[in-house]
Length: 215
Image (cartoon, rainbow, N blue to C red; front, side, top):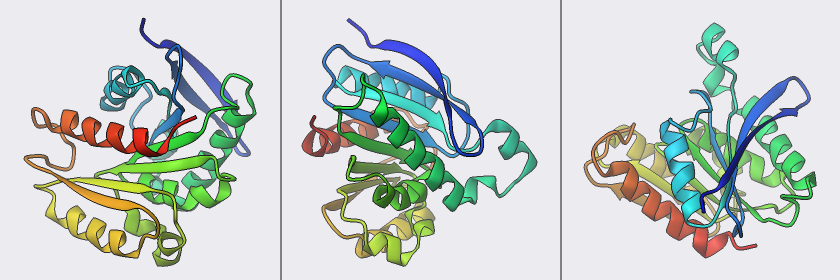
């Protein structure tokens, strides 16, 4: 039996955000699948990842941290780490207040600049977040102090052909505290569009979440 899918709209301090939820029968935990912007649809790359995580036994909550309107009117919106951090922490808290999700530990799978928001948001989440996985991310944008204060188990994944982002992730890994690893996905570029690249990434993240996210 596949996961039960439904969409909800959550009221935050400054606006509402749409969240696409997927729940298998007996979830191991709840994974927040986030990106800065790009569209919350099951047919997207993020949607494909959610399906794989649900097959691995996890409930998923997929959402953008920046709306399409904000992204269209401000070229720097995806770099507003403070705003994205606040929204991510609020959604984590709101889902934890719902009976359906309240007993589940949480993890975060983020990509791009939202990786920095995830690292900063952990300290606002009252120990709900048990692991972070970042793909083609910019953890460096979180800042040196937040990185050094992050003890949450963190896996960073970067395409082997994306040397600039690889260097930034190596530098961030050195500063992170707690369990950590950096995976170099062979043959992949920043978007992981190459055949098999996303499959490799999903295998790595599933292993990481199974190790640390267990309700």
